[in-house]
Image 1 (tube, rainbow, N blue to C red):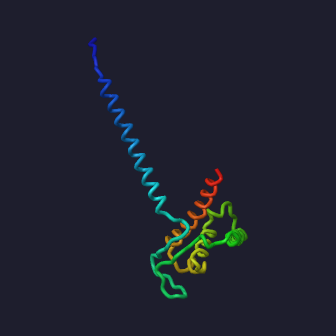
Image 2: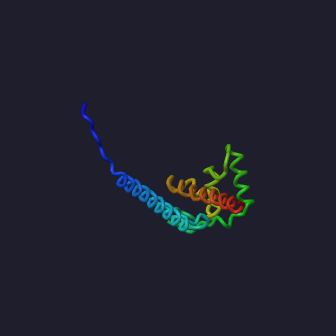
Image 3: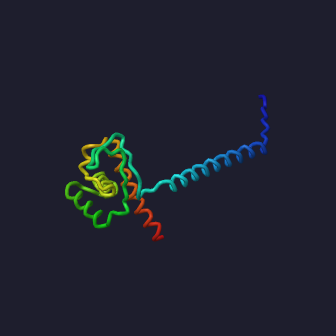
Length: 147
């Protein structure tokens, strides 16, 4: 039987392993930095929503609308939740599209009938997501303040 010997360069293997660790750490740092930058840019309380196609309001044809969730009072939010709960089962108001739609309309000072009849489904979903982000981020901020 023939014996086969393989010599390993332990130092080379250690260098390769070390380079892989640094490469992974560098990527994690980039991802964290990007997430932090996006967090700073995103304001979930106020903003401008741009419709994919014009919407008819009292002022005429509108392509964008300002929204401001900070002007909504807790009693208004509770009333929206009560109104929706009468019509459908709801586990978490922040995840309910009816609550989200009503909240966005309240923040933008537009009737709910406008977004239910005149806008596209992708626009409707985008509005609901904006409201959901506001509702969930408000909750996260309150919890972090308590800790």
